[in-house]
Length: 594
Image (cartoon, rainbow, N blue to C red; front, side, top):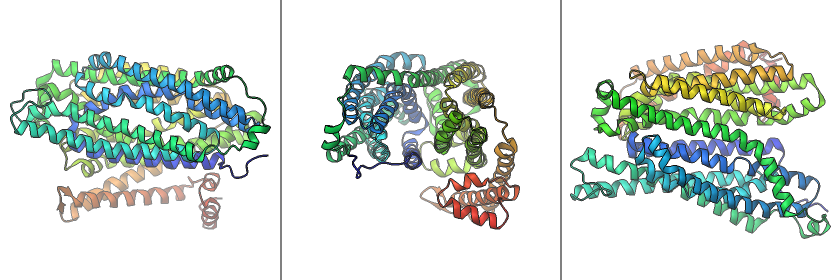
């Protein structure tokens, strides 16, 4: 007898829960990094992100396959009512995650010194050591995440993500603040600062930054502990909803060895894809920092002169210039990563329909599914990206103008603008990967990513090595990489499905409307920033904030109106939204859609 009270969600509802959680977590992440950058400056931010760049690939490799494998297996077992197998899978997964968590933690420790040396960022070691334990805690937490996802209950995973992010913000910022206060108090007393004898404020800051970054990294570790504890308590209090009666009537469970083999077999393809992506990012992080440091060593006078205004204001030591420029670069990534993280979830609801259409050889449904994913991605990423590019400087100024990273805004803004204008490429890559995987063509994204990764490393080496380009060359490498990925994946997607895409609907209409959106944003900001009286409060330019918000309003309005007038909004896409049927009827009434 099935348990009618067991909580379960449809695929769409589950996707919406995770999408909402992803958005909240990303916003919390931005809210974390803005005050962190204002406290530790671009140099400290560079150390933090340098450690994070090593952490993320190891985290991805440790976590990539097993949660998905557990989710798939538990879901299948629940459908077959093999409840004893479900419980056995949980126990086996716990042992496997314990092993991967321990191995991932040790791997991060082993790679710490070689990575820091090759990246010419030895000062990032304290931050790497501080963040290392979180690999283990994340793996333990993912036992429960994969399990509940398999039970078709995405809420525990979503809530744990939010708790984890909140813990990171609170404890990370608090620890960073305490470490900075302690360091400067030592300097003012004429004592050594974190073991270094310093002669002035600039040297004191240089000594403090690595440990302030490490303190912030401790926040990441504490956040994972909080998320883990939340999942463990939830499981202990609420369980999994499987009743004793269901267990009694379910078949004898498969052996733990067979379950372990099945989990590993399911995990390997996912790990292989993630491994290419993770290793690429790790190599990319090392080559950017290494090439930047080498170029600056050979052209110190030119770089000092090029960024004289910024370096003079922040009193940056020559030895810290590479990390300062890298920190300015990573400031621009906070907003660049936000848009793809949202578009990744926009196409999730169409993937099951795509798989079904492929299995049934339904050409019309296949075409509609592919076009819907691509169109919705472009409809969101193009205006958001172009708007971000047009307002890059005022947005960064609004966030960082009162902190120690204020002087780096002028360096980060052009990078953020360049990413904004090309963000649609990054946004398209993941939905295309998902669609090809749904069609059973998982090797194609691995191939395209591999080619793109090689091109990225080569491009980074060439362009970052040009003194006049320096850190801006990292943008060129990223754009080249994702252009290759999107072109190969799109050609393959069209060839595999055999559908003829409507590029006017997918790309041209959203692009035209997005360009108008960007013009509206840039123009309205310029007008209102000029005519409004200058108001300052707490170091913030209230005028800049108001002008930016007005510009965003005009940009959104112009985009929506132009899309309606161009007929760029499709009824099938509207219907998938909350209250979509009512919205579609209103738009049809006024002739905006058929």
